[in-house]
Each structure stands twice: as C-alpha cells, then as structure tokens.
Amino acid sequence: MERCRRSRGDRKGTDILDQIPVRCPSAGREQGMSSIAKTLKIGVLAYPIEGVTLEGYAAKLDRLVAEAAAAGAELLLMPEYACVEVAGGYVSSPDVDAELNAVCARAAGILAAQRDTAVKYGVWLAPGSVPVRGPNGITINRAPLFAPDGSVAFQDKRVMTRFENEHWFVSPGAPPGIFETPWGKIGLTICYDTEFPALARAQVEAGAWLILAPCCTDTLRGYNRVGFSARARALENQCYVAVAPTVGDAAWSGALDTNRGYAAVYGPVDRGFPEDGMLARGALDEPGWIYAALDPAKIQDVRVNGGVLNHRDWPASVGQCAILPRGPLEIA
Image 1 (cartoon, rainbow, N blue to C red):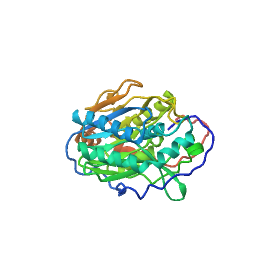
Image 2: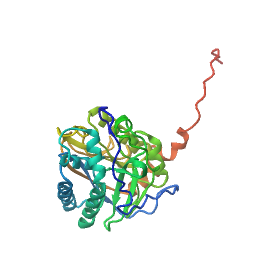
Image 3: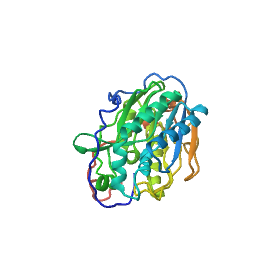
Image 4: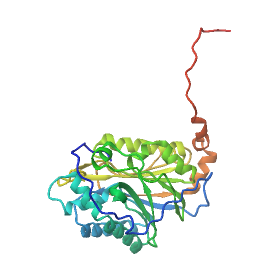
C-alpha cells in the first residue's frame, strides 16, 4: 500500500484474533511441486472502492462473487485493503486513524461475511487483506483464503510501506507460508511484499506454482512497482502470478482516496506462454473481473523443458559479493 504520509493517531481497537477460526498456511518446505489436480479458472478483480457499511460490504461482496462464480471461476482474488471501504459507513470526513479503527472494530464481521460468501457460492475466495488488531493493540495486515467449506488460512504481510509504518503502525506478521488447495500449493504476497524476491521464492521452494498478489496503490508508480515485480517473480520462478488492485476515487477517505491499477495474470516468458508472459489484463483503472485458465502441469513442464530454467538455476544467482581485484592488463 503506497499512500501519502499523514498525522499520527492512537492505536486503540478491539482484539478480533480469537473471534473467527484461524488455520495458518502450511509452512513446510519441500523441493518440487506436489501432485496436481487440474486446470484452475481464476477470477481476478479490479475492486471499485466506494464507502459502505458492514452490511453494504457484505451485499457488495455477494454481488461480485456471484458474478465470478456464474462465469465459472473457481478461485477468486480481490485486492489488499479492499474491505477498508467499510470505514466509509462510519466516518464523517477523511481521517486515516478513525478509518483504521472503524475497520479493525468490525474485522470479525468482515471476515464472517467473506467466509459466508465463499460457502454460499462454493468457491475458493481470497477476498483481499484485512487489518486486524491482536494482543497489546498490535495491528497486522492479514490476507485470508477461504475454502468452499468455510475453513480458512491466513498469510500476513511481512514488509510494511512507509504509510503502514509511520501512520497506521502496522507490524510484520507471520513468515511466508503456502495454502493447500485441490490444484496444489499456492502462495500469496501482499502488495509491497511482491517487490522482495525472497518472500515469493520461499513459497515457490515450498511447492507453490501460483502466487496471488493483492495490492492497493494510489499512483501509477506504486502500481507499476508491484506489477513489474509480479512479472519478475513469474519469470524467475517460472510460475503464475495474479495481481488484483483497488481502483477509483473515494473523497470520503484519507486512506483510500485515490486508487490506480489494473487486474492482471502473468506467467513465465517461455515456450507455451505468451511472448510477454501476460495471460490476461484488464483496462487501467476500470473495475471488473478478468479470468484466466491456469494449468499447473504447464508450470511443471516449463521448469524442466523451458528455453531457460530460471527456477532450477536460482541457486546460482545467490552468493557472496567480493571486491574484484584490479591489476595490469596481461595479453598472452
């Protein structure tokens, strides 16, 4: 999340961590990919920020998920901090601290609405990250993945932007993990985390063939940092990466006032994939779903038979840096 820096506020809020069942992502590390099931149809949403009550958010979520489910999407990705629009129903003017407090106070209700929607439509739902307050008032940026049976696992954000550090005082959460799904193992890097290769690489080395990248940016510079990084992660790991942004203006908000970007799905830049690696993309700043069919078997194949083998060759790129000795030129 890239936002302008604003005034410091208090950190009061409610502890919601025990108000909904929590199951952490699998953290085991293993080489290669696990057994794979079938092609996955993913829906990736450029989410229009509006400003709603908790009840309005639940109704909006229902409409959006119904649309994607009707299109045959099996796994749905929404952006980082999409649910912060709930603050719009409870604040009277832009105030980043009041907005965060309003959302944290309703985080349990937000998560429950997300869970109920996944169950209702029988989909795997990554509804974007939710700011939650834990013991001692610590705030973390937490992204759930709900299964169709209502069970949930969470991936926390690890590296905070300046806005999160200096004004919302968001703390790093748990280390990278992976989600077990019918299509194999999936990773998730929240916005700024996507810009740090080691985080996605840890998930890939644990077996991930797809990385979900929900984001929230208020400039094209910010969005492009995430987008360029997502393409790089897809290239270097020979995997799929899906990017879901917030879009639109929200004059009522100090936190989500401007939102830029487009939904996109990237793959390896190699045989069997588009020349630029882009599998699907939406229009800039336009809300709506895009869809892509993702085949884990193609990832498995390109990692063995690709024109290059970035995934295999990663260890060769990691090493110590030393000063290169300089001396007189010697020509035999």
